[in-house]
Image (cartoon, rainbow, N blue to C red; front, side, top):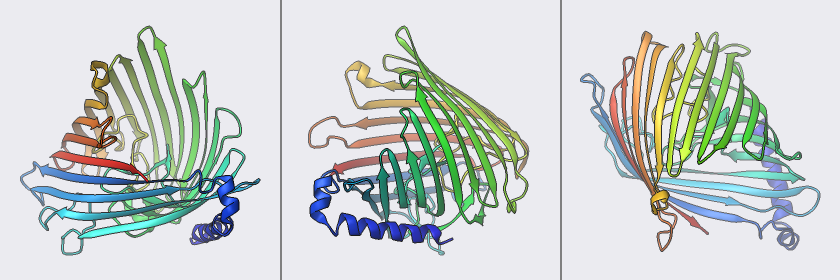
Amino acid sequence: MHTTCTLARSALAVSLALGLGMPAWAEEGGFFEDAKAGLTLRNYYFNRDFRDPGAAKSKVEEWAQGFIFKFSSGYTPGLIGVGLDGIAMFGVKLDSGRGTSGSELLPVHDDGRAADDYGRAGLAAKLRISSTELKVGELLPDIPLLRYDDGRLLPQTFRGAMLDSREIEGLSLQAGQYREVSLRNSSDMQDLSAWAAPGVTSDGFNYAGAEYRFNQQRTLIGAWHSQLEDIYQQSYFNLLHSQRVGEWTLGANLGYFIDRDDGQARIGDIQSRTGYALLSASHSGHTLYLGLQKVSGDSQWMSVYGSSGRTLGNDMFNGNFSNADERSWQVRYDYNFAALGVPGLLAMVRYGHGENATTAAGSNGKEWERDTEVNYTFQSGALKNLNIRLNNATNRRSFNSDFDQTRLIVSYPLTL
């Protein structure tokens, strides 16, 4: 279980020795010259109003301030370039109470009160040969089978290793292994598990995949396979394509998952297949989407606990319609106000509906979600790049709590 940590320490030692121990050489090769650093200030207000009369809480409401610092060095010269990435995060409670905690903006103590503050930091050593890069340490994976969650105050991070090779134009070959995760409202690392059974842990997550982009970058095909050891295996195939038709741009995002149990099958038998199609049509500032999705089999769609479900076609603010046997659809409309001379202003509204879901509460479950969002990024002046997001969601489920939700997020990225 400690192999990845040992590799991280060894690679980090090499990085420090080569990158910092010989500063003149490093500077000539770009270790410092190509370095980038940034600090994001994130202010986050979260309110969830439960609509069920028998709910344990009438609402969850919290307000917090986050600080996210990221550093990425360049590479030393030579056949093997060496570099170092780092991330440090800190969150501070601005408002919360024992009766309103639980938004996952902040850790929660045993007495039900949110922590006053929390934070964590991590490093990743990186090596580069030609167009192949290896990173070992604290990482933010964003591949189809494992996407880190950045939906609260601080992002989720994983500890492990990832390899990305792009030696052939248009082709990306990737592989990696992760052993531990720090959830978005935690300072600690913990073992990996699945959303289907968060209390059952695994020794690691392994993956490999290939993506090929061609047709003047308008078409992408991908094939991936992953293993959450002794819990599940997952294969994934996808196709992305965009096509200009007159003044319109048409898009298609098609994907298919095959899930089955692995090794000791610690959470039981797993057999499911999930297919989706997310179709789009854009003209001027308007974009329309239609999403169709179906889960077949006795199990829900499999994913690592805490990770985002952004790969699925019908992923929304609070769910992705991925229960066993569930079939769902969504319609969505986006508008970019740059078409009216207001760059930086975006608006979105969508509705998703699922039925025939099998959950612990029984079969034939139904659910729907309605999301709206207004998003503005300042384009110039002292507040350039400051982003304000206001979104609202309404969720109704026959097998879980009903709620209305509002979030206000103000983010200010600073380049250092």
